[in-house]
Image 1: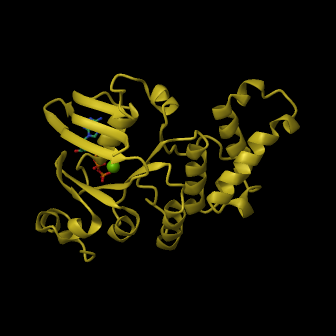
Image 2 (image 1 turned 120 degrees about the horizontal axis):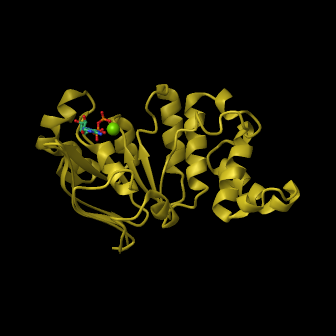
Image 3 (image 1 turned 135 degrees about the vertical axis):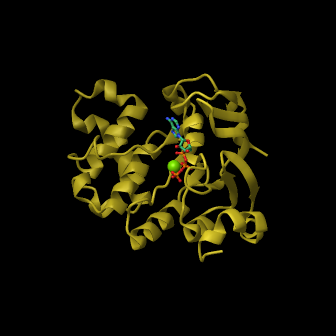
Length: 250
Ligand SMILES: Nc1ncnc2c1ncn2[C@@H]1O[C@H](COP(=O)(O)OP(=O)(O)OP(=O)(O)O)[C@@H](O)[C@H]1O
Ligand SMILES: [Mg+2]
């Protein structure tokens, strides 16, 4: 398989507490992969180890076959690994288009020449508009980001992440805290993202996970319990016992 991302024996210990233990995960290029598990299972910790926000206690991270375990976050972003950022603090007062153009300029290097007339940035503006179109945000492009419903703010965060031209996008509960109807819309947009972008998603809503993911890894107590297709995961008695048994979706 054409490999986008791989971990080997990845672990994180705080004091005596093991938040992640011996995690081996492999994502093919273009994967739609979900990471699920109960609260405190270690999902966010794992994403932090991938992005470089946390240093692992043991194990390795590879991007496209290259070992990146000791690289800083920005160096991993440069190699195509991106996670979404909360925009509340960042670009809230700018319009959706302005924010996206800034992110595109940052990626293209045009940010260093930002004193140039706006017309010189026609390419960046065109790319920002195209991104917003992909995310269904064209009609909202002139509104301040902070004035949008939360579901759309999450889409702007994804637009800003896509502006970095990621190969791999990490999404930690993108639908958390937004109303059900908006989550469905958000996931419809995620389902339409170009398949050259590999996606690893954490999500608690099983209905959304099962619609979106082609493969699912179940994390329990910091360890991988099992991995499989949605059908395999849904039918797995171990999974039902520790996880799906808690809900009505299984
Ligand atoms: N900085 C830290 N220091 C010590 N323990 C931590 C730290 N960060 C997280 N933990 C612990 O590690 C465990 C895993 O946390 P993590 O946030 O990765 O779980 P999660 O699967 O993302 O949970 P949730 O579904 O609630 O988001 C938890 O028991 C948490 O309390
Ligand atoms: Mg979490």
